[in-house]
Amino acid sequence: MTSSRTLFDAVGGEDLFNRVVHGFYTRMRTDDLIGPMYPQDDWEGAEDRLRLFLIQYWGGPHTYNEQRGHPRLRMRHFPFSIGMAEHDRWLELMSASLAEIPDADLPQPYRDAMWNHMVQVADMLINQPE
Ligand code: HEM
Picture 1 (cartoon, rainbow, N blue to C red):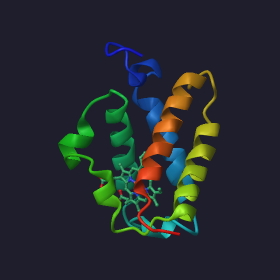
Picture 2: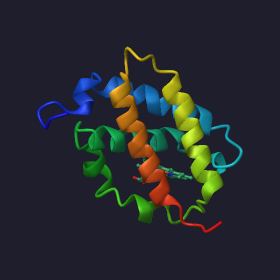
Picture 3: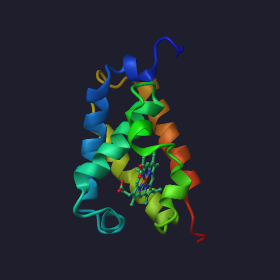
Picture 4: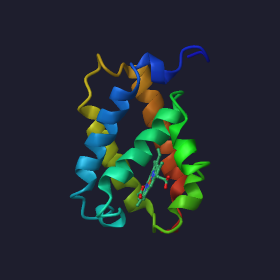
């Protein structure tokens, strides 16, 4: 991956991110453990925020920063109690969403890169000792 060809370009741009995040939030809406933490009257807004964050992180437009400022994800997650169970559930829902995307649309090296980043961020967001 070079600076002239980002993962965002390599996977064909926004559409892939829309699909991954939509699949994730479709599951989140009915999740019993962490679903209730999300704003029940603003699912579309929440979907937008994660989508725009990932697009920006992987080299697409910087709309996230324009709308939200610096991500500061650890700080933004402090209001939520995140232990190992919440961490695992987030990743489980994301893994299920990624599994719906055919390899042709998200080849393995890009899939691995996206997944590793999500695991790293999820680890960093744990704010409750077991
Ligand atoms: C570890 C388990 C996690 C839990 C329980 C969790 C929970 C939440 C909740 C409840 C929100 C508020 C929804 C909203 O109004 O936008 C949120 C926002 C957000 N989360 Fe997480 N999250 C987790 C992991 C992650 C990971 C791994 C990422 C990135 C790969 C991430 C990225 C974001 C972003 C970008 C926002 C919106 C921030 C903003 O601009 O306000 N989260 N998360």
